[in-house]
Image 1 (tube, rainbow, N blue to C red):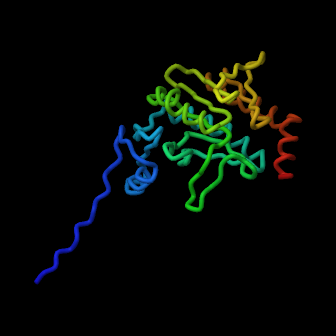
Image 2 (tube, rainbow, N blue to C red):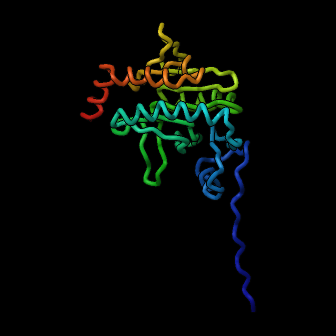
Image 3 (tube, helix red, strand yellow):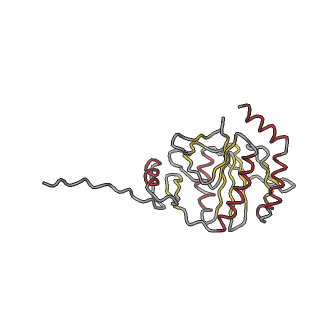
Length: 225
């Protein structure tokens, strides 16, 4: 008598439009190839398209700015495309983020994922603009991400939103064309220079922010936590 081996249950692939729980989303995601990227936004799966230069180059420039700030600000941490467990219906992979490590609004779980809302999230919006400025923006707002940056590469527009009274308010540059973060003092961004790929100017303005008294006070505050 030959005993039949039980059939192994295959894991269904992730597909855009799937409506899943976060647990089922993670189960299927773990079975996908490493280079595969998908997000769970308001309970719906979105599978990312291949990344082209008009996404990758702005992404690189923005990551450079946030990375330099994080290096100069002990007690903060940046991430690039890190899976983030916002809530039971949302598990995005923000293009970039900044978070406060001690006493902040997010943490790293035992299995290595970010849980909770980072203080600042940034998205490079190409084909995903409708999602980034729609369902995903609402998920970030509801979970109280304090500052949300969206770079629409096709339109070459950069929007910086700040959470005020439970809604996102568009922040306008000051008279010098600079936006200054409230949650990360010293994070100064020359938006016009960034959009025109004038990264030397962007770096010079960022250095002025890092030398400001507000940044020095923030570094001391983080050290005392």
